[in-house]
Amino acid sequence: GVDLDGAEHVASGLCLHDDPGIALARLVDASMIEADFAGGRTRYRMLETLRAFGLDRLAAAGETDEAAGRMLQWAVELTDWIAATLRTELEPAADQVLRREVANLRAAWQNAHSRGAFDQAAAMIIGLFAGIGHRDLVEIRGWAEELAGDLLADPARAAHPRAAGVLGTAAEAAYQRGDYARAEWLARAGLQRATDDAGRVYCLYPLSVAELARGAHADVVEHALAAARLTTSPSETVGIAALATAYMGDLDRARDLNRRALAAVLSLSDDAWSAYVQGEIESAAGRGDLAERHYRHAVERARHAGATFLVGVAMVGLQAELTRAGRVDDALRGYREVIDYFARTGNWTHQWTTIRNLANLLRRLGDTEPAALLDAAADRAPDAPTVTTHSTDGSPPRSAAALIPQTRRGRVDGEPTPSAGPDAGTLGRTEVLGTARRAIARHLGS
Image (tube, rainbow, N blue to C red; front, top):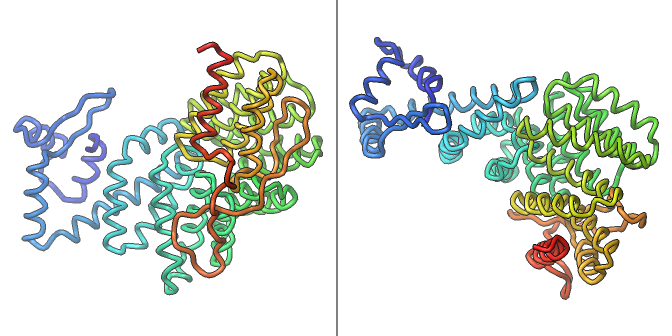
């Protein structure tokens, strides 16, 4: 279905004699179009029998390709608008439009992919980069990685002007589903093909966060600041550099960098990210009250923006501070929420950090057996980050197992080998989640 604006936009290209709104109202009155008033915004949907009839008539008239082209043009224009608007104060409205139009974008993506319309498919995917990065739209990640697979399998597309953008977007998608090793590989492959600054930024961003996951903090700073120099919206990348600097222990420089990031804020997500980074800095400095305040600000701003991933990472930091403050029940309830969130979205890089922090809390409560099981699973998990950035009991960071990525698709030359999974005897993901949830419920008495 589409809303009135969408219907009028499509109709404007058809040179109708009547006003599009009036024509649409007549079709609704004739029961040829359904009007759905749910959700406070009217959406219009064609009956399936009429849709099938219309497709047959298009084919008979030889107009199928023209109709498909109009749909793809609509999708490209929409994703361009979403990309631009998510970087402004209108981010919440753009988030709502994106979520509302996923079904139509799915149809457009399938159309472009099946027809081999790589230019349009690439434009759509790149336009959805910000949607992939901060939102829980798991399906769109799959589109990005599938298109990257098509590109890598076709040597003729190696020099395509959008190749770097496609590979960088796929790298961000891989990172969001918890495979930071593949994310780094895709980002580096994209950098090799980049022909302009925009393409380089699309790759440097996921490269820096993937390096953050494996603890290569100096590399993070280098690549995040390189991205910041190439873009007009550097707030988030400068914030990434500040985060890595804080993890290296240089809190003064981290604060300076985060002040730069805050001065460049354009959207609610930018503000939420800067608040989260400041929370991490204050947490490292042992200033728990300030850290908690920044984490809560990050959660509130990210929720309003629809940036669910930022809500999740800020919640991890917040629960660590609640634990340090002795507010155990609040921390347990928070861990239950964030564990469920990362389980739904498949981001096990951040899930493992959450699991490790929960294990620290359980150990503090004297519940050593599940804590040991969770720690052992995290230490052996190939997709766990190299270090944990929150330790609620003062213990040193733990090293993860060797960096072995999990991949879902066929490999090309140089691509990392997929993981065989955790060692025998280690809890699998389902068992990890069950152990964590049972321990939380036991201590909450529910």
